[in-house]
Length: 153
Image (cartoon, rainbow, N blue to C red; front, side, top):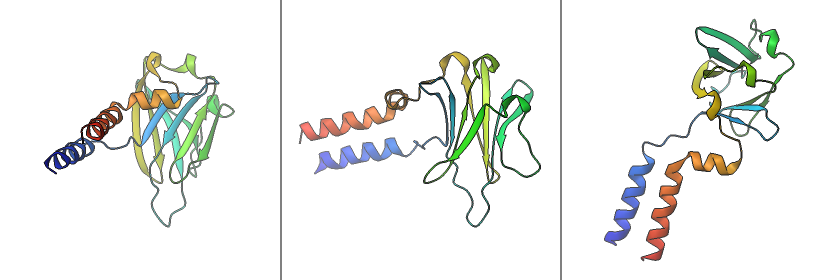
């Protein structure tokens, strides 16, 4: 009983600071850049999205459906956006490697709510499930605690 309380207490403490990232950037197998923006839109509003990046002081819109805004001509035929279930949007960008700086900040806005993430050009992960799992080291800790609990109970 005391052991169970300890294990569940540790799991609870570990999960408190962990908030799932609302934005991820990775490279797909076909070398396209994928940016997932998992912001829940406000209810009863028409959903709008805007994906952009900031390289130094310069910010460029990659793709948007916001009225009055337009994407940079450089990206018009190289990006596409799809809606994700249950929430969010995914932007895919081709032919991007030579345009990234060492540190690029990606920004997304969904229905006015924004999120950003900064990535290093040489450290962008693959979108494979294994690399995304390894990126979240806390999941390994939870697994190890559950395994320990299971084998010692």
